[in-house]
Amino acid sequence: PCLCASNEEKRIYGLYEDVVLPIDATFQKIDIINGKTTREVILRFLGDLCSWNIEIKNCKGEKLSSKTVHINQALLEIDCPANGIIFLSKTQ
Image (cartoon, rainbow, N blue to C red; front, side, top):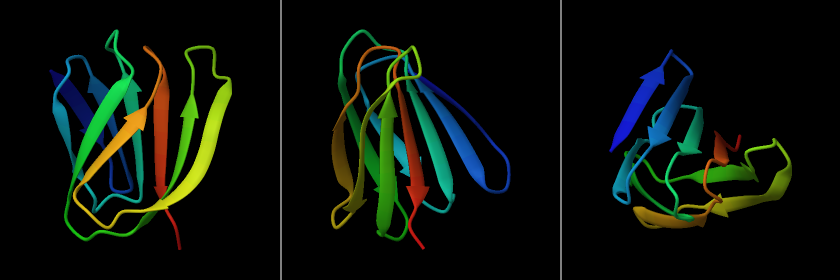
C-alpha cells in the first residue's frame, strides 16, 4: 500500500491504498505522494510530536494550501487530491 525512500534529512512516501500511513517523525522533511484515487490521507506520527509546515500541491504542481499545524495527537487527516503531493517540514 505504500513505498518509501530516504536520506539523512528527508523521507518520501508513495501512498497507493486507503491505509493509515505511519510517519517516522525523526525526519526534518517528508513528502507524501497521494497515488490513490481518493483525497483522504491519514497519517500516524511515530516519535516526538511537534509543529509542521504543511503544503499541498496538485499533480500540476499548483499550490493548493499551506499552513502550520502543531501535532498534539498521533493521527492527522489531510485532504489531498489524487496524484497530489503533501510537503511536510518541521518548524524550527
